[in-house]
Image (tube, rainbow, N blue to C red; front, side, top):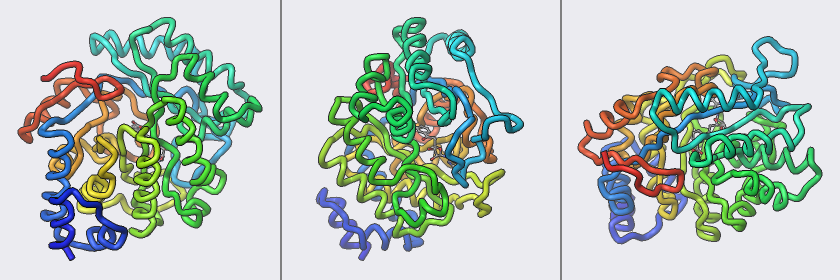
Amino acid sequence: MLREIERKILNQERINRDEALFLFNSNDLHSIGELAEEVSKRINQNRVYFIVNRHINPTNICVNRCRFCAFSRSKGEPNAYEMSIEEIVKNLKEAKQSLGYLSEVHIVSGLHPDWQFEYYLDIIRQIKKEFPSIAVKAFTAVEIDYFSRIAELSIEKTLLMLKEAGVDIMPGGGAEIFNSEVRAKICPEKISAERWLEIIKTAHSLGIKTNATMLYGHVESYEDRIDHLFRLRQLQDQTGGFLAFIPLSYQPENTDIKVSYPSGIDDLKTIAVSRLVLDNIPHIKAYWIMLGEKLAQLALLFGADCLEGTVIEERIAHSAGARSKRGNTIEELVYLIKEIGKIPIERDSFYNVLRIW
Ligand code: V47
């Protein structure tokens, strides 16, 4: 079957579910990687993107206690925290000072039982007021659903208010694995796949670009991963609103799902198959925070074309035992990319080129 898959990829034809399953079951990592690299080069030439950004998680207090999440806390639990807007602004000022400038802030929060939608809007408004040139990538579909319920607004109105406050683009979190039986095991309180896809579709219809993620390496099967990828491919055919896809390698420490970390082979294969299936999503991120710097570098030869960014202070993966640093310098990201013979491209949130390093 590999020959037929190769033929299809080289002729720019789509692979089907059975072929994707064949690739996941194959041990021929070199051939799969080579094909993914072929597609990556067709779309992004020899470029690898990164952004100068900072991640901020305003609170870890969350009414959804997903079983894979080591970051969330219930109100009153030890290590539960809440950030004031002043603290968030201070964090951004410090990041700007240490890096020289900042292109983007990535904001993902817990679903706080007491905070009003207005508080989340104020966070965005204040950031835009203090730092008008920093793009805001904020709030997953899961948070949008929560805001719409606490504020009793439609999804459309909720999104429009966030856009008006200054949200430029949305991150891809909360997708996990779309299969409902897997969701019932790993995140029973979280919105359904159908709701996640509906909210993202609405965002795209309002001109808000988003990313998409897939959390893999816990209790799901290869078939579940394929189902996830094909549902994303189908939505992208309709909207064209996804900028990047980020496979999230499961970090098991301090969580309720005790399995081993995904292997390096599984990480690289998942990146490569994602590149091959999602022929309509322009960018595949090797999220170095979860892969580790060294494997993320290799993933850039297996279909990935983006390293996310400097991040500065990662909390979600590190609560669950991520072995990478919490943040990186521009120089280190540039070094990782140059070492594999590709061109480091510093980008803005929409993948416009800011600087070729
Ligand atoms: O939605 C939670 C995941 C996500 C664990 O869009 C875990 O540019 C692994 O979505 N092991 C948040 N993953 C991170 C995220 C993200 C990161 C970087 C860039 C972008 C982007 C998005 O982290 C959550 C959840 O799926 N997560 N716990 C864990 N133990």
